[in-house]
Structures are given as C-alpha cells and as structure tokens.
Image (cartoon, rainbow, N blue to C red; front, side, top):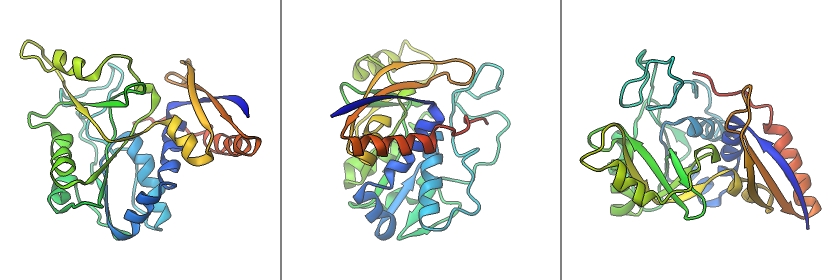
Length: 257
C-alpha cells in the first residue's frame, strides 16, 4: 500500500463530492426510476450540475444562486435568515423524477409525495467526522427545509444523504451544542442535529477510487482559505485514479456570489 498527500480547496471539494454521488448505486437507480430532491445549497449546486448533465438536462441550470441561506463576509448584506438582501433569482430546488427534471419545483411542493426508495440530498453547516454527526443552521421559525425533510425521513423512510465539505468540520458534540444554541436564553440562529449518510471529501475519494483518505491538515490564504490536506492510502492503481481525479478538479474556480 502507498500513501500520497493532496490539497483540495473548498470548491474543488464540492466538485469531488458531486462526482462521487454519481457513483453510488442507489442514487443512480433513484435518478432513473424514483424521485431525487436536491435541496438548494452551494455543495448541492455542484451535485445538481453533475446529475442534470448525466441525464442530459443541464441546460438552464445555474448553481450561482442555488441556495437559500449562506455565510458571507461582513461586507455583504444578509438577512437574519441567511438570505441575501438583494434577493437574487431563486428558481427552486432540483427535483428529478424518473429521469426528468421537474423545473421550478421546490422541496415543499414535492415532499409529501416522497416514499421509501426516494432520496433527498441536503447539505449541512457542521459535521463531526469522528461521531458521524451533522447539523444545519436554522433561520426559519418552522425549521425550514430540514424540518420537513425529517418528517419524510422518519415518517416514510425516505433516504437522506448529507453532502458536506470538510471546511465545515467541528470537534464538539453536536447534540450538546444544539442544547446550548437552542436554549431559550440564546439568540440568533438555531441548530438542528441531523442524521443521514454523510459524504465528505474523504468518503468521496473512497467511493471514486476504493482508497482510504485521512484529513491531516487544513488552511490557506489568497483564495485557498478552508482548503484541506488529505492523505490517500491505497494500491498503485488506486493512487493513479486519485491523481487523475484530483488533477481534474483542483482548478475548480472559487465559488463567488
């Protein structure tokens, strides 16, 4: 077995995760024969691009404003809910039903029709890789998209995937943090712990190559802020595959609104 280090920027990580999602058998099956809902979010914008391209229906889609809430530098004007004050153009989530993109639909319009075998993809704002926990920031008094998602997941066994980049990694216990942030004595955003199948860059490398990836350092400047260092361990063939994949994604432009 061999080990090789790679650096991956947040935007390259999003592209890596997006490519890995199309190598998951049950997702490909649902893409053609069931319903998949890709809930708006920055990472999910890359996934929507890949999936819509896969079914030959990517014309008219842009990931540029494919989000509801977003974290930005202080110079941007953002509502307490996380939405940009300029409004922008939000055309809905991406709903793909039996291989057809149902344009201009949102999760809220389709969620009550979802059944076992259908899949929802929803990003997260925090991930603890050790405990396999994730959390979503809440700005809506009725818990926003994750509130209705969990009704479908717990009530009708709809499968939830959580694609999330390692720039959102935390070390704390997410359930304990939720108790602090959601306390009646707290103000600002709320915090929703969520369980599902978490896909970070580490899982993406494993899905795409069969190799094991480990996070061992992070950080950067001049546009590389949030970047990660991963060590990939595998056979010579697996590392050759990793080389090709990283070469393909490493020049992914930074996501700018």
